[in-house]
Length: 226
Length: 338
Image 1 (cartoon, chains in turn brown, red):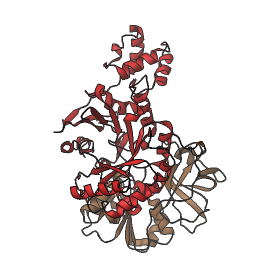
Image 2 (tube, one colour):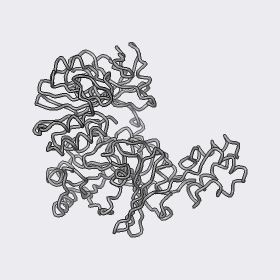
Image 3 (cartoon, chains in turn green, blue):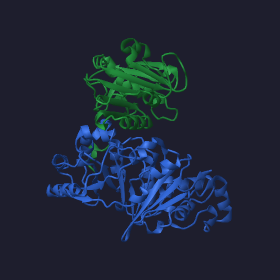
Image 4 (spheres, chains in turn yellow, purple):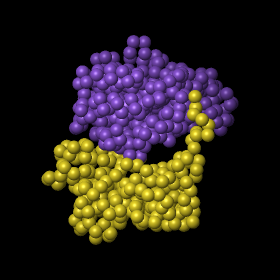
């Protein structure tokens, strides 16, 4: 019954890569990088593991597709198997990674990008890859120091970059969750695409909200962190 | 205190040794836990009173009773069980002639966010332990009559793989429920690494939620498509020998005007070519706020006939427990105030 022994559990797509950078860009949040060896389109993901015998986890690429390095963004999960160790890697160390894959893909047409937490990663990759011109980016976080890359995004996108913070207040930041921000907009555009990235509950709530406001479900593409 | 219920024979033997009981006590405990109608350590009468006291100092038996039961007009029952983290899960018992199938949950809520699913609206609330999974069978009044088990309730089984595999071990081992793995079906939306491990480590049947053969449609219905495309799932399944002792089936909820066209029949026959399988067509029962609609009966029948004409064994699953939303997550969502 089992398939051929040589194929069993063989992580054929993982290759060894060398870490070039590990930045803690916010408390407990890291951006790690390694040399890019494949073309990709922004929005794609990679699988990562530290040990070939440990099942890899999936992370969105957080770098531009013309940059010499691939980066991923993650926060440390206390009870996680991978992220506490991944946060401790130093340049020169080897990890296992796949080439980018996946179909969370945008083009240059108008769209809204909606993310929470580290769900900003695919949109930052799109931004760095030069497709942010017709986009509105809405980023929801709990604390103000979780607006990763905000200086760059604010400078480049201006009012099309919306920050929502549920637990702290600041000028130019919407006080509340992403869903609350969307709820207070009278006329949500219904003829554009919406891209959602984050945890399941946010994605489901925002998707339901958009549908209830007349956005066709076909216009909504979601990537869930699981 | 830790529960005995949900532990494997190896774990029971290890804990017996750890607290100074004879090694064979592990097997005795397993038989009491999984084969007999008792609910407390004190009723394990082939253990000495002293040994029962030693056990009770560190462990509880661990059965969790249901807090609510709904019964459908067709005899289907939906049980609501509390979980260790203060949430609720649903279990459906579906009688059909001489069969009694139990549909178990594997997680509290779900991370997958499928557009058509009520459970997904809860988000992810936590993992179930093997004990909490098996408890859904052991702690319903019909547990001695259960003939089949399907992991098609709340949650994605392969996102809680270790506990699901452990629960299958308990259900299929001679020291456990001693069920044939051929009476068990685990349904996934296609988490490939988990599916491969499951196929390697278990002999139970596999069901895959397919719902449309086209990538662009599937990724709008099922966000998992972005990370684990259907092509990768099908490619993996094709490398296994299904159709004899072990079966693979594809679940296909039929939505009006979305996935019920001749174009879909054509593509399904193309991508499933070479796999001995069955397609189960499922009527969609709309959930609150959904933009999706159920296809009509005439289209459903035609769709089934066209697939059969293409050589794919296709059946329409009878809708059961429709009036109580059996195992769709609605009851537990309400219970959590959702």
